[in-house]
Image (cartoon, rainbow, N blue to C red; front, side):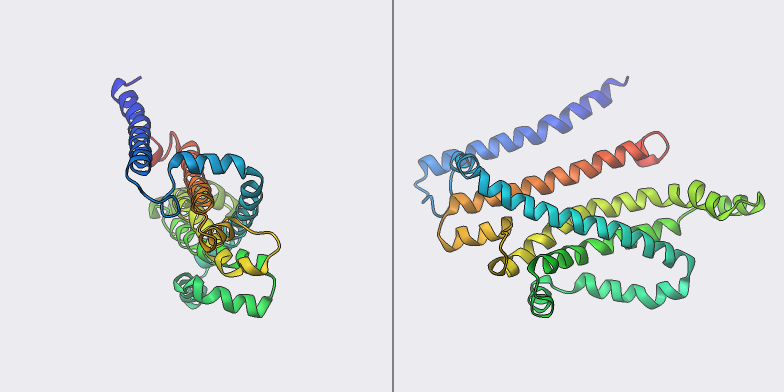
Length: 262
C-alpha cells in the first residue's frame, strides 16, 4: 500500500473537517461576542437546538422534499437513459429533439412553476415536474455523449466478430457510457434537490404537506431565523450527502478498470 496515497486520503478527509470546525467556531464566537442580533444571524448552537426541539416538523418537511427529489431523479434516470439510447441510434431524432431538451434546461423555474401550478393545480406534481426538468438534461446529455464515445477500433472489432446487438450494448456501449452517465448523475442529484426547493417556494402556500423550502419561507415571514437556518442546514446537508453518495457509487463502479477509478 502506497503511504503517499494514505496521506492524501487522510488529508482529504481531515482538512475539510478542520476548516468546517474553524468556520463554525468563528461563527459561534461572532454571534456570542459580536452583538449580532439573533433574528439576523443565529449562532450554530441555536440552530442545533432548533434542529432538536423542532425535529418532528423538520423531519416531516425533509421527507416531503427528499421524496420529491428522489422521485424526480428516478424518472430523470429512466427517461434520460432511454432517450439517450434513442438519440444514439438515430442522429436525425437527436438533431430534431435535443434543442427542446436544452430549452427546458434553460427555462427559469421561478417563471415556469407558477404557470404549471395554474395549469395542473396539484402542488406536488408541479414540484415533481420542476425537479425533473432540471435533473433530466445532465442525465440525457451525459449518457448520449457516452454512448457515442466508444472507440472506433472496438466498434469495428465487435462488427468483425459478428457481435449481436445485446453483446454490443452490454460489453461495449454500456461500459463506454457509464463514466459519462455517472458524471451527469453527480450534477442531476443536486439539481433535483434545487428544483424541488425552488418549486416549493412557489407551491408552498397551496400544499397541505410543506417541504423544507416552505419552512424557510415561513421562518423568514415570522422573523424566526433559527427555524430558517435549521431548514437551510437540512437542505445543505442533504445536498452534500447526496453528492458523496453518488461519488462513492461512481468510485465503486469504476474502480479497477476506468482511469477515473484507478
